[in-house]
Image 1 (cartoon, helix red, strand yellow):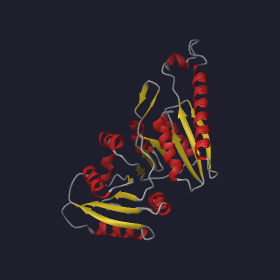
Image 2 (cartoon, one colour):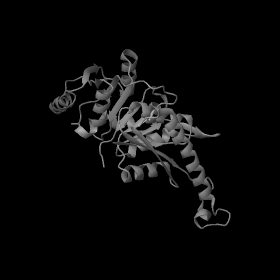
Image 3 (tube, one colour):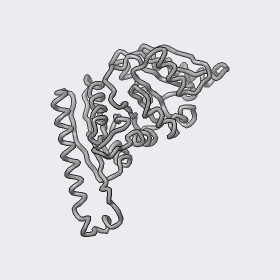
Image 4 (cartoon, helix red, strand yellow):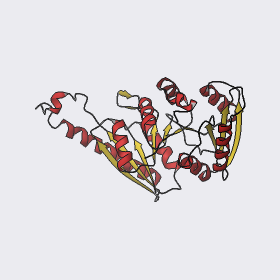
Length: 281
């Protein structure tokens, strides 16, 4: 039973991420946690001190959050009618990132799926920024679904690597599951730096090859260039349905999680992007 966290701001972009998750895991038994956090915009010290003007305001926001979550849950149940899927709702007076981290720990979440950006009413919420922070801090894989992306099975999965680390089986567990489940092919992309692989890189490549033994896969080499450019070049030439990267402070992939670069990817990439942490709970 997979436990999947779906943060929502009640926008269509957030619901689109829910649609993607429900279809991506339609053959798996899953519990989906629909999560929303609220913080009154006039939340100040006087709120903490229970100023008469603020008493009960939190209850109003909580009630609104619960009602909207109920509507999202009912909509999902009506649209999918999948006996393998259970939808639960979760609301909290907290910041989104802090609540995500607490929920991952308390509910033993396996995966987070969220939109890259969204909007609630007239007030835009840069979900891309929230996604960036979630990717940086989460201790489970995070799938970011581009706005208005229409579901397409992950048949061509792009996996960039510099062979700088020896991947652990748990880090690639979700990638391998999706590739097998959807009969997809994993395209291992390496950007050369003008010289041959070192001995450690060769060892890590051999370890990766062993892990990919039971799934369709191919290896691709591109000349020395920025990784973002390499990803876009590969997508243009070969097509990609799904992008997967593993964070690790010892590799060039860490550069992708410097906020300006991640924002660029988060706001403009046109396929779902799964970021796998270098550590798990």
